[in-house]
Image 1 (spheres, rainbow, N blue to C red):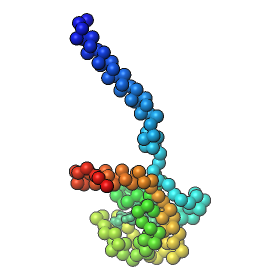
Image 2: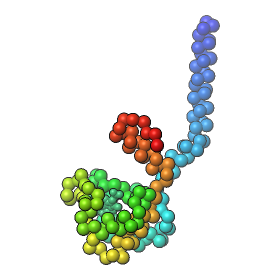
Image 3: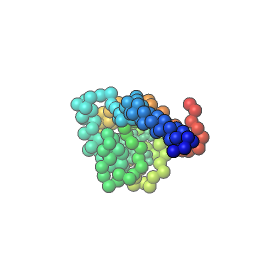
Image 4: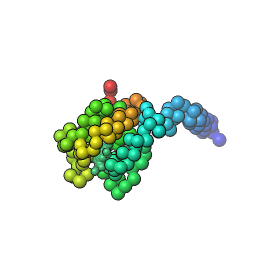
Length: 164
Ligand code: HEC
């Protein structure tokens, strides 16, 4: 083996070694832990949310929306916004008014075909609209996820780097 070749081999060994160490250390890093964590949570307990979840079931919200990872129907491909984390974006009052609107599309314009649009729930009893709105408002998304989603969205739409 010539001297030059030996040198190249040593350099390669160092690079490979460094990459291995980086991977090992990287596995322990905080970021990796964070990525595994579910970014959505609710500020109420399961038991407290039970009644609202029952109403959400009875009114077939999950036919169009995903919530807690459970989008399970033939309409699954309807690109309705996911309800996880909605309480970080909308207030309880806004949600109540939206559910009460006779024409939800006057509040949030739709780009969907009529049969896939958000239906009006103005006929639901007032107490039930309050119950659902209160529960939806309790659904939060962790800040880092919201930031990363915003960044990704911005960069996808503009092709520019996102600088808050
Ligand atoms: C037929 C499908 C469908 C059903 C059923 C449905 N939605 Fe929607 N929803 C949508 C679509 C689509 C949108 C986006 C606005 C639009 O296109 O009308 C939307 C929007 C929303 C929004 C506003 C999101 C935002 O911040 O802009 C909330 C909140 C919401 N729905 C909650 C519910 C709840 C709660 C139920 C059950 C009581 C429900 N939806 C039932 C399709 C549906």
